[in-house]
Image 1 (cartoon, helix red, strand yellow):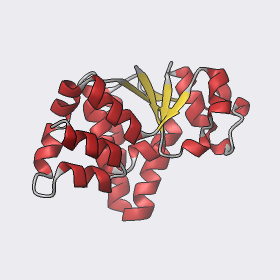
Image 2: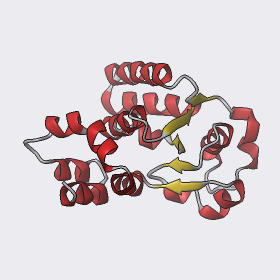
Image 3: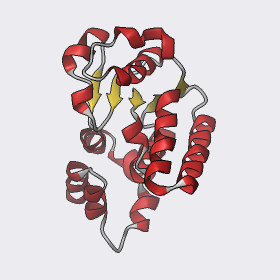
Image 4: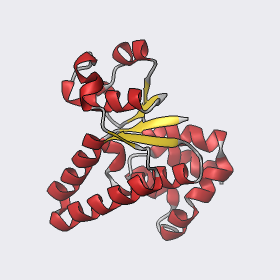
Length: 178
């Protein structure tokens, strides 16, 4: 399965680490637009300062190294044809199409309505729904990919950590299926 990662799935750090860890384990193939990577770095800088922006740029370079075909620069290929509520999100759809994605992974479902994506053969998935579903479909691989993160938050509990990360359904499923 190929998924296009929106900038909001790349930042915050915890979600990106989960997604990239699962992708490295073979759970899915990530693609993203060059512009989404830039938005992620700028968001990190705006919220946490210059050092966070530099770290994000380093993380983006590591992602490009891990997934050499992952970053898609499809800016002019499709952007004018996206009929969504925010034309600024067209780069994500363009990258999804150019990268052969089946879905766009985003917290901003309202920006990618099914009426605009369906004719293109795409859907938008919330990270919480995707990861909760992945836990049902592929529990051993996903749990193995997140084992280090689970150890790191052992004192606080994985469910509480996932809830704070904006993944309450995934957190509930993680605890229930432990």
